Image (cartoon, rainbow, N blue to C red; front, side, top):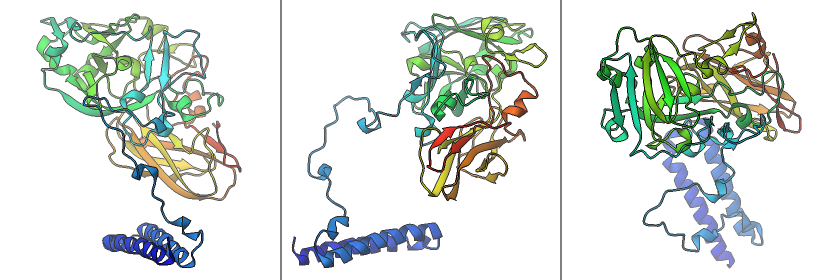
Length: 443
């Protein structure tokens, strides 16, 4: 390329930058926008100057990539789209902090640090299984409502899908989320500490629709939801919740449920611990009292300071976590954007504050719309980091006025021993002067 050609190329770059500036002149009053446009012009100007001097300086001009020079791959006539091979590191991970000795009862965790929006892709939604994942043919699956009803009902999947459905955005969280990190930083990453959390658009039939058709007897106070898996996992659910917002879900994010998430049918109970959203649902039996089965006595209960155990603590109270920067990451001095998620099983997120000094002072973060009931809300906070060590964390307040507690706050009302669940405490991350981010704890 001779000097004349180089000059023409650099002039074209400057012209393109000027066209972008003109196109966005209507919002040039925005300081951040002006700064971005300034960078564009600075780049173009540098390229133009380089073109006049010749030599290797023109390497700053945007090169033509190989993808511009070759044919791309074809798409098969019938295909299911998959993530790029360059995103292969973004995966659900089986628990690797509290490691089970066998594979049939375990859980897999969502990579929250890599979740870019408030909806979790179907292949990354966390899962908990008690006796493996069943392979259920939807054409053969049956669901029944029986017990204290006027008319017991049996449904096939095709029957259920003929009923008017709703699609709702909700988070779902396992009550064991954070159980390894109550008293010490046992986990390294946010996937390990908080990965039993996901959010999706859930599609299905309101339970109330079918209970109305079956006709509840006045004695009915609880419904027993039971799954068709090898463990026959079941939970007692109060009738008020079933009639309020519980769903019989068969789809998430626009497609049928994945097998590990309950295909072809699951109960979904918004804002409550994930284990009551029974997967592979086969029946709902109405009764006068809770059944007090193993999942309500030996499991999914909370130790109290007086030596007793709390049952049916199913609401997931307000919680938040910083996902970036978080454990396992490294940052550099300069402008840093703190990002994270906040949620509440009792309503909407009202505010989120972040701390840079271990909880001594708090600063209000910006909430990203939409802010919906019982859904994940993303928050952001920008600051300039000077390289000094710091301890960062977030704290949410929900629409009921509930403030996310510290571990010490929770210790005042509950006993924290052994296999304890419902950890909604503030999660701190320590940042060293080298920029390394690690798990930390403070009261």
